[in-house]
Image (cartoon, rainbow, N blue to C red; front, top):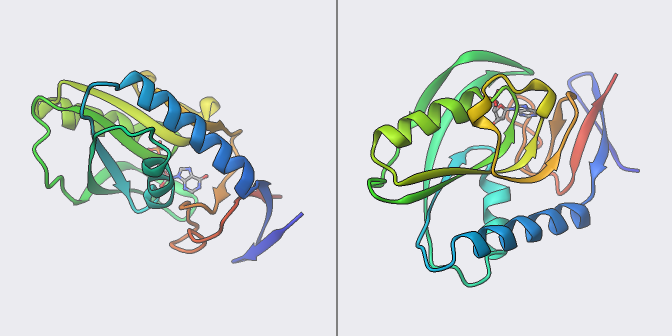
Length: 180
Ligand code: IMP
């Protein structure tokens, strides 16, 4: 099993590239089926979701769709700061659009809770969420449970496949869990 050491923490491989690919394929299929005949707008949450989004977009079965990006931040190191900062605001009109937010991980749900309210306030017809990972035990906002989930994860901090630890490790091809 592969492992990584970073800033005094030890991480072990948890989801292999093959497992991730299978998860992404299944999410892509579900979305393509649910949005058949519609033209959804994917709102990709930077920075973390860029790797998942790139794979997910190519796993859609011929769905006609658009992509746009938003950048928010709520984390510093391994802890949440509790408030959401819009670092790169939305560049595209979402009014009367079926929006699918693409996230790397839903943890407390604060990010998604606030983003959903923001997009609804801008007049989106519908707002759903696709997240590579979901930490169900940590969820504090019921409306933030993703509609499409690659994999559920327990409470541990994870890195890789877009997920960072202080800005690093997003480029790892697998997802690694911190070990105590
Ligand atoms: P939430 O607002 O608490 O749901 O947190 C969402 C954001 O926190 C994600 O988009 C990630 O950027 C970050 N995050 C939460 N858990 C982890 C983790 O285990 N590893 C890396 N980033 C995480």
